[in-house]
Length: 207
Image (cartoon, rainbow, N blue to C red; front, top):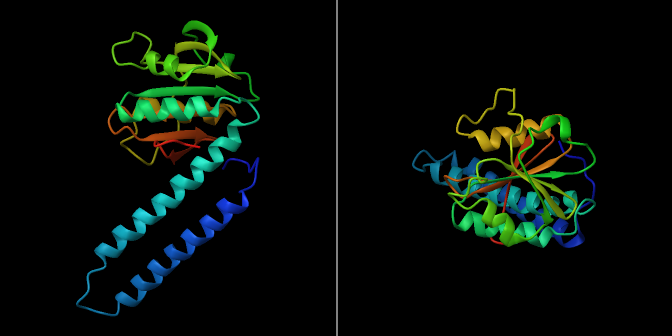
């Protein structure tokens, strides 16, 4: 699991506690519902799953900012780009270098060496752009290269629906401390990989 590089804010802690209490109430209600033979618990399962997913996404989105803060001050750029890419279902794979050198783990693509901006990120991953299939490598506030090939995870992934982008994100995060952002081309959903795990994040503005 990722290390807690920065604790939850007072506001976030209060919000998380409130949501977890609500989740606990839903579970207790479901337990009591089991005593009634005339009630179906399927709806309760759906409500609990939805609430748990909301809590996970909100918390992961908060931590994403703290994980990136020591390495780049362009979080708003990532937030804007991810939102726009998600809205358009444009698949994306963005590897952000942290402490570990990534040279030995990435098959270098096309050098970019440009200042990090949301429009440039979005352009790279625009469908039809020859660079959109690979990963973009970010170091600090610069786009180093595009169309990079990342190592695909060698471990058995529980979710059989994960595509190449997600497996590549997991692969790099298993070998290094890099944080890898992924936008699904099929669903538009956004996640980030860190320490060999995937975490869902909001797409309607991360900050």
